[in-house]
Amino acid sequence: PNVFYGRGNAYYNLGQIDKAYSDLNQAVTFGDKHPETYFHRGQINFEKDEFELALSDFNKAEEYGSKAEELYFLRAKTHYELNNWKDALEDFNLAIAADKELYEAFALRGNTKFRLDDLSGAINDYNIAIAGGIKEAIYFNNRGKAKQLSGNIEQAIEDYDEAISTDSEYARAYENRASARYEMKNYAGVIED
Image 1 (cartoon, helix red, strand yellow):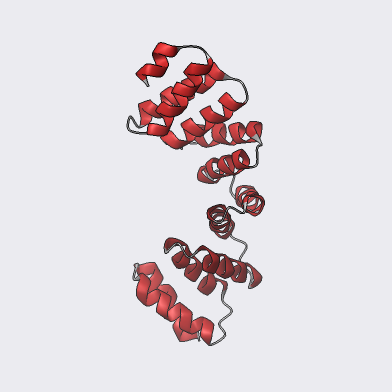
Image 2 (image 1 turned 90 degrees about the horizontal axis):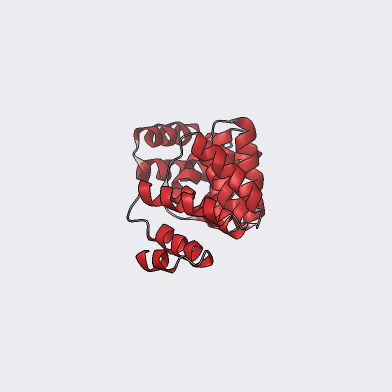
């Protein structure tokens, strides 16, 4: 099993994913208990959209001793893909506790809190992510939507404007800005969007 473990992880680090996956599977078949074996296989399963398999591998990696923020972050993303919002939130919290500058985790935790109807928590996480350098249209848009649902229409429109400025083809921001403008009775703005 150590041969498969070592070679599988070497292949993984070289980007030879198919060979890595084959060897990591062999290592598991022979009873390997290195957390990296399960972690890397979990990463591959995640990349292949095999989220249930990825989750199982990440849980095994933790069982065999991995406590890395990267494990918690990827497992949180896996829970998110499976719509397991509370489990995703728990793992995003662990990842952020381990690395306070993991701004992507703040952004995705904001999405998770949004799904759990914690709008003020979502806004706070989006603020941290954006201040930390995550300047993607989706997060400006999502923060805007959380603000709009919280009744802060003018601030929401500012976020939608920023989303559109970041990515002029991001249709959802136009849709949401039109919705906010409608709430403000700015019908000409609605038509424009």
